[in-house]
Image (cartoon, rainbow, N blue to C red; front, top):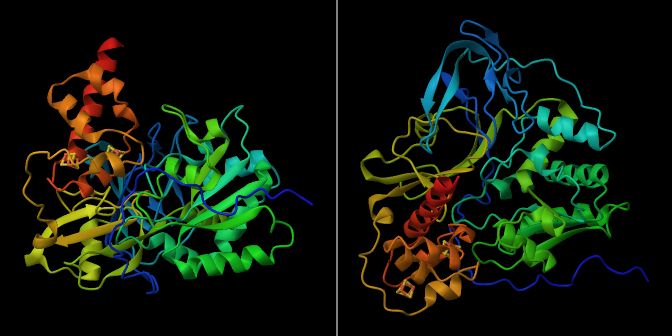
Length: 446
Ligand code: SF4
Ligand code: SF4
């Protein structure tokens, strides 16, 4: 009998917290926003080298037209997301604080597209080229270029993990992608599996998304070629189940050592919307020009998933869904656990944004911070087995040796420790500070 490539159940992982199931938009179909008056497309929406614009002010552009690229391998091209005219190319401050050269396109409202046709992909080389040309980056996280991730040098890869965990409260954009485009997801999985010669694929979805699990299982079970090599794996509903290292441990039992990458333990992790977008690009030849975002939170009138052209301003998106302006306490890119608070809504939506959460003043109010009571909860919930309370003290003392000893850099800033802390200690802020101290020390060392 052929030995199964899969364990019967997910492996146990460390720590984690149980969060309220705030996923009101999970069962509502996605709506499409009409083109805004203008979009702003920064020449860097990814980790790596920025692109240089290949258009100039006054040029007329079509949806899908390349407007920026780089010769550096660690970079991905940028495409026009609306049709219209380039009206400006100038530096712009983005939500994270970086200042990036940005192409502004005034929309003609017509969304006229470039001529496009299916892409032929017959081997690994062609797949990698297609992934880059699509402009694909990790759509659920930091924007790591996908073509780099799919080619990990001489490291032997035996497992592909498709990340559909979506463990942050509020966010349901990946879930809607599965329900609305399940065949795109699965054909993307089969394509990457075949072209990279990977024998085992886990499609990882938290158990609180039973419909998503069901639709993908139906397709996977009906695939004669792959049904013993592709497994839809329901994972326990526990935050941060979708963090790469946690996901790998859950599915394979493997631990990614400190300072190493998934490829070092034979794994590639891809976001589930990324693989679906790739599949559509291969079928149509239209690159990544739009994004689905969950717009949620107590101050949002019509909570829903919305597909917007990349570069749309957050303020335009919020005007589209309706927000109770007088009661806005905080606007964030991403969910409440790992999201980034926005100082202004006058910022463009980028490839890696998957949600905008608008909290009311009450929702955004944090409890009063008191002294640590040494209860140890922060330690027990940390998925990286760290000692947040000791790290906090070391940061206060600026004791970089202690921070190194306590593996500060392995903190993924998931926020589980702060969530569990009865004293409401600002532990995530402390973790970020601790990491900044170590970076500063290493920079001085050269
Ligand atoms: S934020 Fe860092 S220290 Fe806190 S639980 Fe997450 S990984 Fe652990
Ligand atoms: S959870 Fe908060 S109060 Fe408890 S040990 Fe950790 S920092 Fe201290």
